[in-house]
Length: 532
Ligand code: 3UK
Image 1 (cartoon, rainbow, N blue to C red):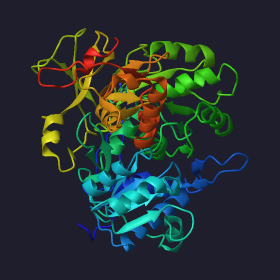
Image 2 (cartoon, protein in one colour):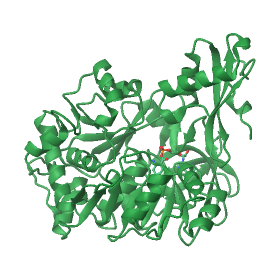
Image 3 (cartoon, rainbow, N blue to C red):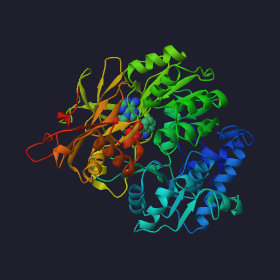
Image 4 (tube, rainbow, N blue to C red):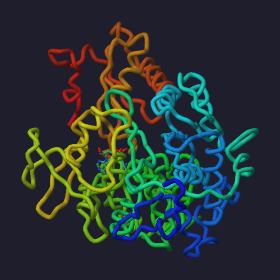
């Protein structure tokens, strides 16, 4: 099939989501816009540094950047099917690299840019990365990982800055690239997903998965239109941000506002005021911080038609306070990396505070007991989902794949209850995993880091609700010598965690205790430490 050139007509995906036999989703998301007359429309607005104008990228420039990035990867000897890791901040080059790789048949793998060297060593080795593309802002964690990893990529390249960079190579690359023929069920991109124990797993998605989320969630649930302007405080590396700020706007020919800095409440308010988005995507922790900021400032948020929240449950009180303060609605919805985006969501005309909402079109749900039998409405059980955007597999992990995918249904690991009207309410996880600011956080990883401290014998970490009813990690620590317990040591342990872990993972409370509750086999009983 490789001699077949994919025309834009071949690659068009109708709302019915039928795919032509030869399909590469990059053509639909990138090339199509030129055919449809959007060459001069601004696709991406990068937020500039204070007092300076950021870069605007038109749809024609987007196609040019994508083709050049695809050619840059191919001319470095990277072959179709090989992986290109991306530790890239939210900027136009993220789009160029992601879609350029896909168009060339290479698998882009966006990674959480908040991770540390040891995490990146794992990703490079596990994916057998052929390319590592990274923003210079992350060089201090990425470059030692490139050095230490036993696997060597063919291309390690900074996005911009001095010397040999992606930006420099884009300038020299050919702007012409024909899409590599594929099919809707062929592998397209990966994301990594973490569990409470064991290493992260490569979540393999195919060419049909992005279109499915765009049509069912963005169009049929949020009513995305070409006139929309999107700002997602959740970054592109996160499946949530990847959909919000890149895939959804590209599906309808809309515009994305990209901000490379940390998602502070002040930045969010300034961006909304200056760039006038119609849709804002955040996580509960950010909405809570924005509400605190709104006590002293009154930014103009009037461009927004809707706010969306995901990543962890949105407490009803937060929803009410936000509505009272801003007049705006927040739609909570649940998504996962494995299902790619949101599959249960509240609607503008159907909101149940405290619930994740009703099923998004295209998805089916079961709630089952421990024996796999469906439970009646009003009873809690394990949530399973079926739909057309589920991962194909976990990369080289048949056991975890078999445990997660059962006859086309995925086990989410979340405990849910459905009411008679079809609203789904979350009752937490069936494992010990925490969501902190919407991002995964394994208690085991924090416990291991604490135990590395010479004064610590062992530790247990659980989730505890803060004043906004949002979960943060709390540590129970047993010292080698109980007499060492002090506020000073608690601070020292805190810094020890901040140094060795992604920054959002440090425990917000540290309790010194004499021992930890354990099972007869010595497993920590975290549930006995939780303060419900
Ligand atoms: C939890 C929620 C209650 C839940 C994601 C939107 O979060 C996303 O993906 P992840 O793989 O995590 C998935 C897990 O996070 N969760 C997410 N949203 C909610 N719990 N209410 C919610 N609204 O435990 C789920 O299993 O990081 C979010 C879109 C795409 C995504 N991948």
